[in-house]
Length: 120
Image 1 (cartoon, helix red, strand yellow):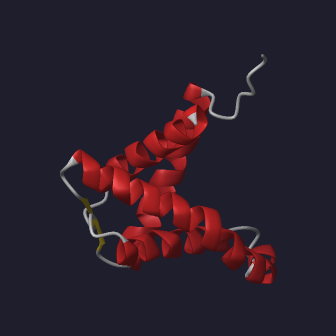
Image 2: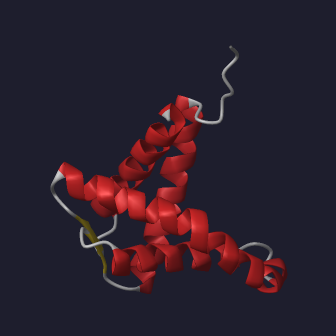
Image 3: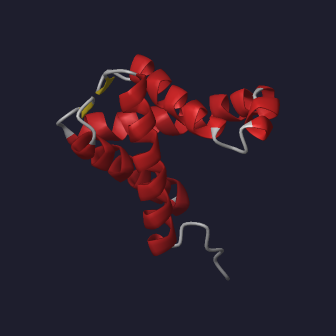
């Protein structure tokens, strides 16, 4: 449960940073809205993104992985459609936002050591 809440917090922080940096991304002002958007974005990334990546594997291979950025932008735009507290102006904003979200998630995840296994 701790890992899930930590991942949700990292996701929310990454979305918040992207909304602050990219002019075309707006996030709800209330804490509850940000948490709901982070949860929707996490669910989209957990269930839909792997299916899209599976079918796009040949294109990902041909572009040496760069098409993954397009997929990430698409997932951000899908989260925009599903969550009321998120607005993404267009594909360029989604692309820049997905890069920032990925970078912030990696940095925070490594600082907070999300993948660390507990030894009981």
